[in-house]
Length: 328
Image (cartoon, rainbow, N blue to C red):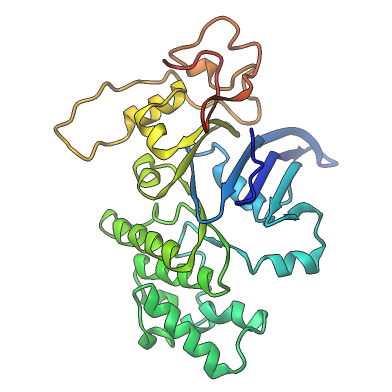
C-alpha cells in the first residue's frame, strides 16, 4: 500500500498483537490469541478513518496498540515522523500530548472520586500547561462549554451526570491537551440512540474547529458512514477492505463488507434490500482458519480460498482489498 505522502500524520505497518494464553503449573504459553494480525494503513492530517467490524475483530486492540497503551507484538507505527515503538518513557510521555483517546464506556472511564474540574484539567496539571490554578479552571470551563456543558458543572462528580453528559466530559478531557490525533473507541455505542446523534454531531464540529484527526472505531456501519472520510473493514485481526467511505458504501468489493452492509439498518424503513446471511459464527482468534480468514463463512468462496491468505492490494485508486475473488 502506497503511503508516501507528506500529508500523512500516521503510518501503521504490519501491526500485530498476539496475546498469550498461559496455563499449567509453570504458566507456560499454551496458545496465542491473534487479536491484530498484520494491519497496515495510513491516516492523513485532518482525516477521519473508521475502523469497523464485528465484536472481537481487533479494532479496539488496534487503536490501543497505536497509542501504545498496549505493547505490540510486531510492526511499526510512525506518528508525525516519530517511530512510536522506539521511544523511551519520557519521549512517549511527551508524545501523549498529541495522541489521546475517547473511551467507550462513559461510566467506567471517569474517576468517581474526582470532580469534573480535576478530570478535565488533569492533563493541564501533568504537563504544566496552565500558569495558575485559576487559568487551568478557566480553560476547563471553556472546554466544558464547547462540548455542551457549563462552568456550573465544575464542582460536580461523574455520578451526577447522564451517560451522554459523561461522554461529553470524556471528550473535553481528550481535547484538553490540544491533541493532533484522537482515537474514538466506540464513543456512542453505550449511549441511548436519542443521544448518539448529538454526540456524533459534536465530534464532527470539534474536528473542524480544532483541526483534529480521528481514528473512529465502531461496529455500527451507519455511524461510521456519517463521520468517516475513509473506512477500513476488519475481520479476525485483519483489514479486509479499505476505501473512501462513499466507495465502501456504494461499491463494496469484499464479500464480508457486502454482508455487513446488507445487515445494517436502512434510514428509509420502506427501502428494500437483499439480506446476506453468513454461515456459522466468527472463528476463534486462537485458531484462525487457514488461507483467507473469512472463507468458512463466505458466500463467494472458491477453490484456493482456504489455502492462501490474499494479498492486501489496490484494485482501483485508493481502494484496497484482501480477497482472491472480489465482487464485481
